Image (cartoon, rainbow, N blue to C red; front, side, top):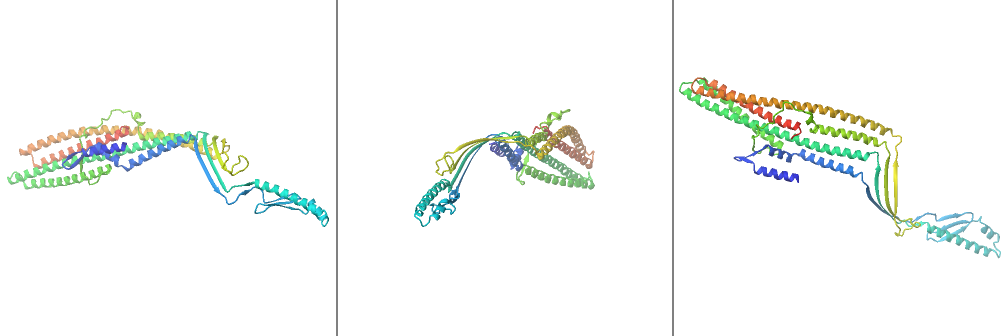
Length: 494
């Protein structure tokens, strides 16, 4: 939504730009908007801010229960038999189940009935003994068949379903510190985004006022060229009337040739400065436009004394170091969490087929069951975790020292920037005074030349001095504007 509004505002500003002929005229605010819209770095920082935001939310969500569901199905070509198809029954014999599932029992030759059958073979008792032996074998085989069938599980279709919830109860403060680290990472992303914004604004201002400076110098070069052209014309007439020598004319023509070069240099400089500003703003390098210089004289006044310490906390560099220090301290606490107990609680609802609700059956009619438990892990001898904790503590100390060093450097930087701004304002005052004096000298020299009291060379010297003084004013004013932006950046006021 914000990007849409910014685009609409820029579009309106674009269509409402004041035109000089067919050339667009951009203000400083418009150049700021163009740069922010077209900057790939600004868009990259915006994405990093969003990534850090969701990482923080993920760290927070890790403190809440996790609910998951799992399911599985497997088809098997055969059933599972918990007993074999052949089983020895002591000294009596062996019970068997054939491939068709039919039972049988083979009497051992060492069994009592087998011995009796062998002893009474060929007698009248042979048949009754064999009848008894066969009957008992059928009973044993049938019993084993029932046992075999009862311990046969249909696992051709196996299904498992589970729904569970897991809740961390205590992880040594690990989750809390991870959230703090993610929160600091989000702040760092926002700080870097702001710093990128401020750097871009500063670059635009620098290129903008450089173009203003070159444009003013081009105007001065044009005026200077016009003055020399007029002087050349006057000297030419004076030579015709015998009031000046050919040498005087040659000096003026040489000076006018130098003015031609300066004028060309100023035009080329304006083209290059316009392209540089267009590049920073993301505009076409070939686009023709002018800039509004109405704010050239509106420069922030430097203070005789400024409490730099009260502005340091606003600086993105200081905020960045503070967040890095917080992350380092949280990392140390996170390392200490590896030395503390971990407690997790879980609850599950599980359904299986075959089910063991009443025997082991594959009838899809069983009911699932609930389970709940707590897992506790207590580290006892973890030398690596102890060493990591010590390393993290020293890293946090390093971050604290760097933050203190950064505070001192930023305080010095703000003080120096304020002093430079004061010096720039003094330069402007002196340059303007020199310009007024040069204008007065030029006026008097022109009047004296018209009256025949000074030579053309003296008038040209006055014109050159006027050009130099006017250029110094432009340089001082544009330098002050750049320092003004720099000072507002250092004070966190961009």
